Image: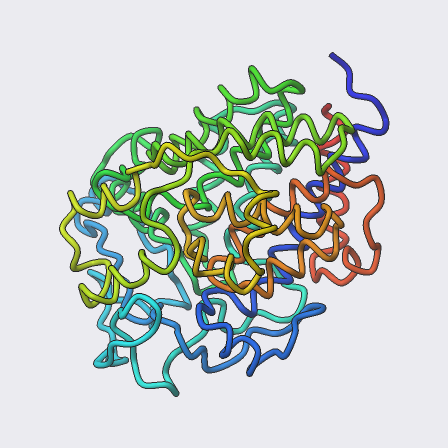
Length: 412
């Protein structure tokens, strides 16, 4: 089925929404305490540099332990950190920054304040994160082939991550580190994705974004969902991500078709089951155990997969709670879709799917506003036939993105 001109405009706007939301949110990524966010930024209303220090950053000391000798014997590249290696505890370098304090929303180990480097340390106003740039890797693979080829995507993914100076962003999500640890052991690329049952945070927003973009190529949600889940499994083996895609793929396609955004969001939200342990209760559980890494795996699994019998009624929640209560207290602002999908749908509905207002509301909500924001940006862009040009042109990669988005849409 051929897309109409108006549908293609909405696809363009959805893709712009992804990259704009990513860059708007980047400076306040993983700010959990809103008082810190307001202190450092006031109210975010445009692009900003990543500040230093980040009061809640626990990137320093994150682990990456590839099997170096095995990788070398197989001729497989294993260094995905390059200039950013100083921030990580790895099997081929020594971490010189001490992480002797426990602080922040999750009570994770942190260095002293002066050495709490921002997750996106060095990125400038309007610059995109690694997560958004990996969506570009997917898009460029599709554009070059003229269609989606999972093996070609994986080749592009490996090349991008293992080539020095390709990635300016220090923050390498755990799914990437786990993927390349498996790759270093000789596992076939299509099987390198880690399981949520093994590593709890594999079930995160980052696994949704590229899959949701890919679903657009199918031009209709039935096949689009199949493509999305298949692609997701290449990087994230997560039941929670697949469940989220089951709602988000048809929602995105319906919005691209021009249906009324508020009615559509309200209707599709009612397909989302609410998790039993929500917002503030989840944070208290993490702090009580002195960090999520100290919670037994079977208990973590239940925390993130035990759903209630209640479905999401965004209109009722917006009537009952203020934004200050919804953000963090009702729904956690962390990276988990069982919290983030209800939160972003509430933010969209509260702001009547207005493009700029919705994206800024998400940026100012902190937490995982980057990956959650890319999803929200896709939906907000799909809801609008016009978006502010100044937000497009303010992106540092504006011209390259303009070309890539145009080339991607030309395939529809």
